[in-house]
Image (cartoon, rainbow, N blue to C red; front, side):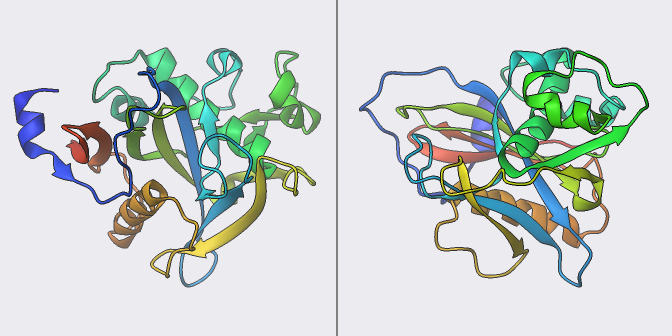
Length: 252
C-alpha cells in the first residue's frame, strides 16, 4: 500500500481481529451479489443464513457469493459487463486483467443462482452447449447470464490468520433482473438454510456478519443519492497495521 493510501485509511468497526492460529493464506478471488427489491416504498436486500456446519462464517446472514470458478472465465454471456464497471474492478491492488474482472461479475451471478435459486439472465435463442455444470439451470431455460446491470458497491479482503481468505467484490443488481427461479435450492442441509429480504435502514438481523453490515450501509448511502452510477467512489475494506481499514477507490 502507498504512503498516501495509508494516511487516508479509516479504521472500520467490523468485529474482526487478526488471528495467528492459521498460516498465511493468499486471498482467493470471490464475488457476492446483493439483490435489491425496489417494488415497495423501502428497498429490500436479500440475505441468506449459512449452515451452522460450514467452515466460513457458520450461522451468519450473508449475501450469496463465493470464489471464482474456472468456468466463469469462458461461459458465454447475453451482454458484456459495462466498460465503467470493468474500470472500477481494475482499480486497487493487486491489479487484475479485464478477463479476470469479467469472471468476477459472472461468478456473482453463478453463485447467486447456486445458493438461492435466483438466476439473472436473458433468453437469446439457441443455448450454447458450454453452459454446463452449475450453469445447467440457465441452459434448461434457454438463458445466458447477463452482467450488464451489475454495479460494484464494495471490495473487502478477509483478515490474515483465517482458515479461509477471500478478496471479495460486492456487486448489486435489481431484483427485476431475475429471469428464473430454481425451486428447492434453500433447505436445512444446504449451504444457505434460510433467505430473508431485509429493509435497508432497518435494525439488522442478530446474526448479520459485521462486514455485511458495512456493505449494507454503503449500499444504503448510494441508493439515498438516487439511481446507482458507476462513477461513485467504491470502499475497499482490508487489514492493515493490525486493524481493518477502509480506503476509497475513486469513482469516474
